[in-house]
Length: 564
Image 1 (cartoon, rainbow, N blue to C red):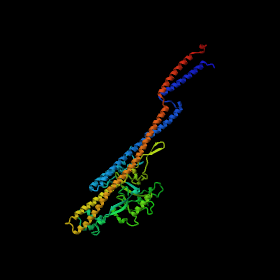
Image 2 (cartoon, rainbow, N blue to C red):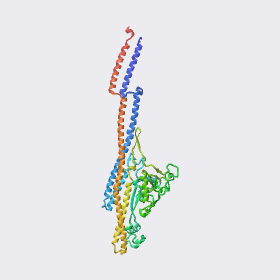
Image 3 (spheres, helix red, strand yellow):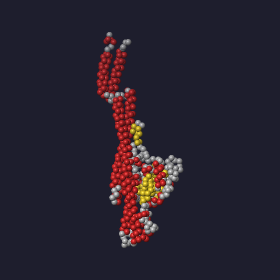
Image 4 (cartoon, rainbow, N blue to C red):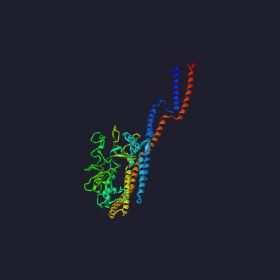
């Protein structure tokens, strides 16, 4: 075939352009450090690059956002639990010191005040926040664990009243009213309970309020209709019964089922309607033929005695609204124990509208209804206190990161101190009676022999009451050592669970970091050039292009005439 000059020139230009294109591609690679400038330059590498970038984007979301936030949350929670455990160690130490039988009552008050401060600090830990979110209140992260002054002020403004605190009790009345606080009991909630009967209470109250240094038989007769010898140490007895201790004291004196808003009663069809008014305020023992049990309200244990629980068929239940104790005898105890041993439900619903700062909010532990809301708003139903906060920390990997308050903070810690406070006051009252009656018994000039004999009866009763009160107080302090250890064990278990979560998150973070490093390296190898190799290629391409230009120039100078 005859090759013309035109054909030769076209081939030369074509080859020069290929060399120049190669040189241009290499120059682009050198300037961008990438193997391709546009996806069409290398579709295979470009496609792999897209996959690597998608994987990296996903890992960075997990690693730099989700896992980081989760670790921050769990670290804060674990630190708070550790702080709570330290407080509980100190609480047990105080109980141990207070249990010393040689302590005087003023010493016991000192220990009590120390323990109150510790328990308040313990519950204050429940208000720990992470980035202004409460960590122990489930999904309600803007809701504090305990009441504070701002809660009362804000609610008072909402309902158009003033937040007034009773200076004597330290409680606010009517600012927050919770209805249907429903507690489900466990077997270890069923306890034996002892209190001291005081058939002389009316007489002694009259005696203690007497402004004179002594009291006459006529005055005694005025406040005590009994015979002269009816009040003596035989009338001071320990009453042995059983109880279920509710989580709060100072309950509403009237437990009205009608306080339950109509929207939340079982008569309707709404799914949220759950309160059966025929069972409200009654002790419900699942599986018992006599359940629900009627509950009689009292405000003082002295309103009942051992006879109140006597009888083979006695199934009376009393609620002391002051102390928050459900009190009953052997028959009810047996039925409750049988039900709980067979995984049956035992529950009780009640109302409470007196709250103090630092009281734990019931919605974090129990189903209940907050009815103290503005007229234009619906009551707030709390029917889920076991709430979960989860983070997506990997492909199809979701991890629970929160710890609910009831897993760490036992409400029994403050209830124990409530009992100790009441016992301390009982010891003080009994000791005061003993001292006053002892002074009266020594005053033979003021009192006759008959009067001194009556005073002797009262003194013997007061001494026995003082003895029982002291024994009960010592027992409470002694039991407190075991109970505080139980509270520590509960918090420690929650801390262990959280520690496990922290370790898992650490492992996940390390794995994601390694994956990120690996995929970054793979993406780099896929996309990025080898500078050294490319530089050599550029030099070679440059030389080739120069040589091609020279050759093409020489060839182009030749013609068929020159050849002939």
